[in-house]
Amino acid sequence: MKDYIAVDWGSTQLRGWLIRNGQCVETKQLPMGITRLNGRSPADVFAEHLAPWRGAQALPVLMAGMIGSDAGWQAVPYLDCPTAIDAPGRQLCAVAEGVWIIPGLKIEQDGDFNVMRGEETQLLGACQLAPAECYVLPGTHCKWVQVVGGGVRHFATAMTGELHHLLMTQSLIGKGLPAQQPDDAAFEWGLEKGLAQPSLISELFVARAARVLGGLAASSVSDYLSGLLIGAEVATLGQRFRTSAVTLVGEPALNARYGRAMKARGMMVNSCSGDEALLAGMARIMHEQD
Image 1 (spheres, rainbow, N blue to C red):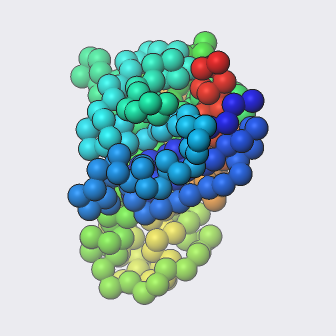
Image 2 (tube, rainbow, N blue to C red; image 1 turned 30 degrees about the vertical axis):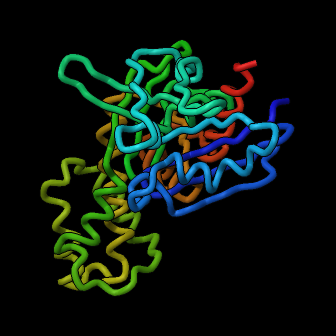
């Protein structure tokens, strides 16, 4: 079994896994995403933090994420969808000897535009861990992906995580709030409203009005807003994708929140860890290089 280095290099974080005999023996997580390099080149950061792992063997390195964007090491072209789910692993982009970036996927047809980088590798792993025809990858920008016959037919993006952050930090809804506390009842209330009224045009302001009028604790606004946004996303995209079964691919706590919304809509839900899916996808790509 081949030894190699797997890298998830996003906008804010650089994460690496040293794989030997199919097992992770060492990890790195550094706040050195491509937007935080402070003028340093990705090649220099790679040489300092990842190259020492390669050793005398010059272990191969697979990288996924925003490192392949026009702000990263090298702009790697997206692959057009529909495409085979394993197509990215067959069209790697070399940026140094034994160092490759996995291409992302794009939708560009009939006025519909979308892109992903990093999630294509998670998808490849998830299709082995928890096969499905619809995958949802919660996060800052949540992806909904339709897979048919081993191919990625279509996908959509919901900026749910980013919207939550912006509303809590840059809008009147979040102004002057105390430290936020977990509140399951507030999340459920928001979830019910989001599922019932997914347009959000009139419901967003309720997060402020209910707090001002004493109907929502000031420390519970974040969970209420989380429920509202996730509920609206699931109501909207669940209807668009017309699916009754979904595999969630992400961090367990966030998977659980999405799972509650989906089950309330009558969907069957499976799930797997985003990191496990990523590493399974990397392993499959490396295996196919032999």
